[in-house]
Image (cartoon, rainbow, N blue to C red):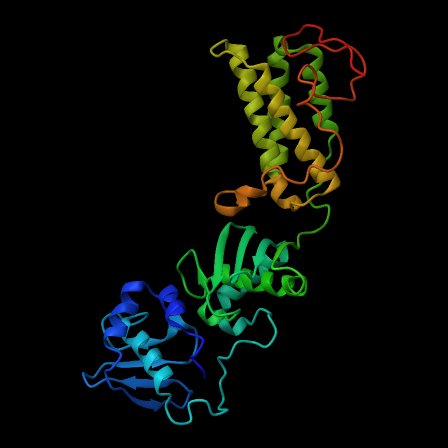
Length: 350
């Protein structure tokens, strides 16, 4: 066992600044050391407080004080070990808690329930950003949105998850993402990883184009005929994880309902922007791009908060943007005269 990697800065991240400050004040307290058959070290202070450290994750190290774990006594014991290592502390004993030589998910770090849940999530596909500067950090974007940081290299014993629970399923998924990204990290300090099935987020655009043709053909005056089919289309998209597409279409439905009841002023510009958002995401899913398809589609819980929001709308491909440059008719394939959103002619394109 070697605790030299647990610097004051790392210990502050694993606990907090106040805990480390109090531990430094007690750094001169003499400790007596002994070792258990499992290889853990016991540090006993003159006041009878005993700390057990060195086996398992940092959060599993224990203290006999009321705080029990992550307390100043444990930090004090680590600092004392670094200043005056016990005899044979670095001997090649059976250290079953050492980090694995290769970054693969070791189920022994987790309970059977967490391991089973993690395997299921990993099998469904991971979308994550893995970076190594200044320290290893994994931001999971799919199937959830949460961050895990590694204060000590890539050692999972000291990894910290935003959820605050040690040995959580998020760490399991992060370990899998880190392992998958390792080859690419040799050439880059940050990797955007997507292990989801290629083409899983492709969309049959036929129903959407048929509905859009109807909207452009009959205009807002026929809102009643458009609402039901749009709701069915949005529901189908949601059931297949195309959350952002469905969200934009449902907002269009809201505008149509306002138009029908005349309780709000409909903005054609806003409708065109929403139509353009759907079109741009469909192009991104069709052509691929810098953002993973699962993020563009908005699978459930992909883009709820945090860094995931940076990937909104990315990956639109190389086709000309349709719907924003020609606000009168957002579908460039219409080479004939068509009716605008207000039911009138918008002129000819091309």
